[in-house]
Length: 124
Image 1 (cartoon, rainbow, N blue to C red):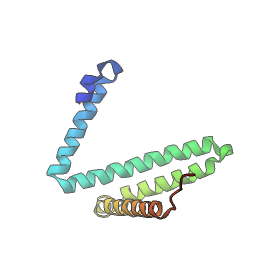
Image 2 (cartoon, rainbow, N blue to C red; image 1 turned 45 degrees about the vertical axis):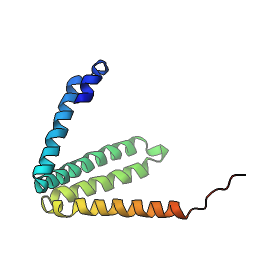
Image 3 (cartoon, rainbow, N blue to C red; image 1 turned 180 degrees about the vertical axis):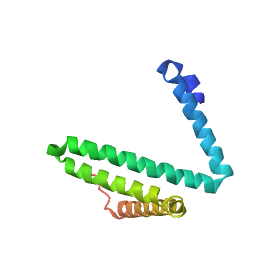
Image 4 (cartoon, helix red, strand yellow; image 1 turned 90 degrees about the horizontal axis):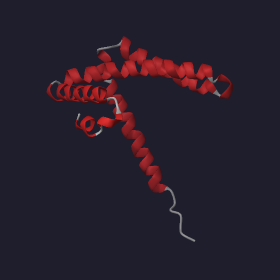
């Protein structure tokens, strides 16, 4: 919210204030009611995956001649993931966030190990 006051000339002042208030409210919910916050995060994740999947599918169809099939397939997976989360809600709230965090931690660990094992280029 402070950022909105510092950048009044940018436009969108009201939107920045509203977004700041939403961040504060959501942070309070996460701190004071972690289970409700986790369920809310899971629900928002399901909706976000569903919507982004549909958008990727539409982009893939529009760019089919330029290799849009891969984008379309990515969208299908996004829609399926969103539907799995939303159709199993609220039970999916018990495992989805942990699964995604675990996948993220594994990919980061593998990435850092790979980076560490790469040979260092010696200056000429």
